[in-house]
Image (tube, rainbow, N blue to C red; front, side, top):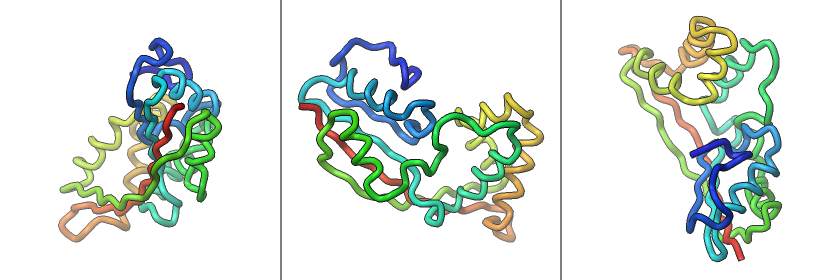
Length: 171
C-alpha cells in the first residue's frame, strides 16, 4: 500500500504488483505507472484494472454526480481515463512493460438497499476525498440521485459495470 506516485518500497521488491481501479487517479499517470514498474522485479508482472467505457458502466452517472458537487475537478483523468481501446496496453508500454494479457470482465454490484450501497461506496478513497471536500450530505445526495434509476421496488440496487484489465511483464 502507498501513494502510487511515491511507493515506499525498494526497486524490484515484488514478483507481482496490482493497481486496481487506481492509476487513473494519479496526477501524473505516467509517473504512477513508472512507480509500479519500478517496484516489480525483473521477470515480474504488473496488473492494472480500469473502468470500461462509461456507456458500459451503470456507475458512470454516480461519478458524474459526485464530480458535479466538487468546487474543482480532481487531478488525474477520472474513472474513465483508461477506458479507450488500447489505453491500458499503452500505459504498460509507457512503463517499459510488455503487455502479455488483457480482457474485460462484467460485474454486477448488488446491495439490499441504499444504506448498504452507501456504506460500500463511501468507504472508497475517491468518495472520501469528495466527502472531505464538500461534506457527506452533499455527496450522499448526489449518489442517491444517480442510483435511483437502478433501484427495484423493494429498494435493492443493482448496477452492471464492465472493468478492463491488462497484465504487463517486466523484462
